[in-house]
Length: 501
Ligand SMILES: *[C@@H]1O[C@H](CO)[C@@H](O)[C@H](O)[C@H]1NC(C)=O
Ligand SMILES: *[C@@H]1O[C@H](CO)[C@@H](O)[C@H](O)[C@H]1NC(C)=O
Ligand SMILES: *[C@@H]1O[C@H](CO)[C@@H](O)[C@H](O)[C@H]1NC(C)=O
Ligand SMILES: *[C@@H]1O[C@H](CO)[C@@H](O)[C@H](O)[C@H]1NC(C)=O
Ligand SMILES: *[C@@H]1O[C@H](CO)[C@@H](O)[C@H](O)[C@H]1NC(C)=O
Ligand SMILES: *[C@@H]1O[C@H](CO)[C@@H](O)[C@H](O)[C@H]1NC(C)=O
Ligand SMILES: *[C@@H]1O[C@H](CO)[C@@H](O)[C@H](O)[C@H]1NC(C)=O
Image 1 (cartoon, protein in one colour):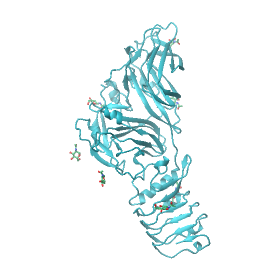
Image 2 (tube, rainbow, N blue to C red):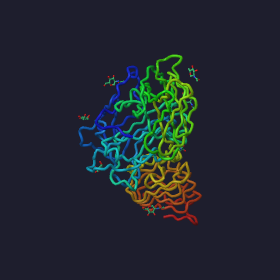
Image 3 (cartoon, rainbow, N blue to C red):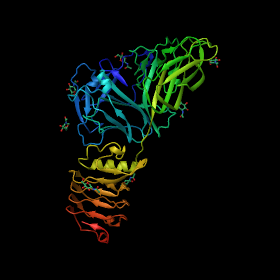
Image 4 (cartoon, protein in one colour):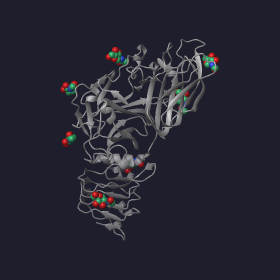
């Protein structure tokens, strides 16, 4: 989806009582910025501390709004991903929004195309070329549940990526438990396709503070008549808490006629979608201000005899198949004296979650990243997943709960030590760390029941060689030469079939 770049981020005039809303809970991050930036009523912080990758730069065009002037780009083309790490509460539900405005920051004229990743799941391709050519900024949105205490949002090159990936703004906002709660977030994330308020003028985009979660509601008009609401709803009684303002206008049609809208616009890929539609009778409150109609989507019955009153009503489908063009039809019941109407709607594509790495392995790998002085630059985010974007030197098992099975960091100039938690990588079968500048003692690895091949040669390790190495059931070779070990090779390692160097 896209937004203009020269106007304010939000250009709606807040309703008076909406101003008491607290700012969205979460993180509003202005990527590549050096100072905090305000946009509309919200304050965005610099991204230092959320990522260790990439470089900051500023777009030359002085006319774009401040939030888009700074960006972070990622020139290191050996890294398999570039991650932002966001502290979250485990099990919490979050709205993630990434915004991209290229601005020719690298002297080019066409933005690069690359991927974005959330934890272990490929989220989508970022292709901003069409929006950029039209002078627009592009954004992507995903509702996802946090599986751990850190949520990682990463960018990655694809074989088609010709210049450096970049990001302008990253927002991660906490949603209440009830929002979109018909979705099983252990299985799916929801990718925003459309969030629309019907019958509004083009300038009337709705966001914070009208929407407490700072969701963007884009205006939509077609040739159908529009109507303004004469009574105010209580949005807090609605699932997903749409803003009051989204009910202020509607598309409608005359008495007895079927209201048809082509929405969402454009052709959708064949997939399952979450669809939520919001309605309110536009007349002044009275016992007679209600209307009944059927709702169908592409000719399939969505809801029968929906009774829409001035209190408003929402209906949703958690897993609805769509592909290609979409048409929503509202057919009035017999003898209803007013035509059907629609105020707002949301459509999300269901994105199957791509699995993750066993938490114990993740923790051990994070400890390792910390005790190395100079780990590879892509050692953040999920160590194993998505499969093409595991950490450099890391190989993992297949399956929905990946395990680290091989580590090969031979000769890459590593310094630092090994953590005491290394032995938690119990699925590891090869560990090759030869030819670096690693030092300190060898931790206990007696728990690594699968370890076959251990290479520690040509480093500066010291202390005794742990006796437990000789007792590992699968071990076939141990390379220890050219270190500063004391005490010699333990007796139990001198046996047939085990290669010691
Ligand atoms: C939002 O900004 C407007 C104008 O800058 C200001 O009048 C209003 O009080 C602000 N509202 C909040 C909730 O901060
Ligand atoms: C950003 O912050 C630095 C140091 O805090 C300050 O010197 C500089 O003027 C600020 N830049 C802008 C554009 O506000
Ligand atoms: C990015 O930053 C690194 C480290 O500060 C620097 O060595 C490198 O030259 C920068 N790359 C670009 C393309 O600016
Ligand atoms: C979802 O939230 C609504 C509103 O709070 C609640 O009534 C409903 O029971 C919840 N449904 C599930 C499946 O948790
Ligand atoms: C629709 O709801 C209103 C208000 O609750 C009620 O008075 C009316 O009878 C309902 N209409 C139908 C057809 O159920
Ligand atoms: C580890 O990497 C080195 C250097 O790239 C390579 O020579 C070696 O064969 C690799 N070892 C394994 C077990 O893949
Ligand atoms: C990891 O290893 C440490 C030290 O060996 C141990 O105390 C801890 O319980 C292990 N953690 C897990 C999650 O198994």
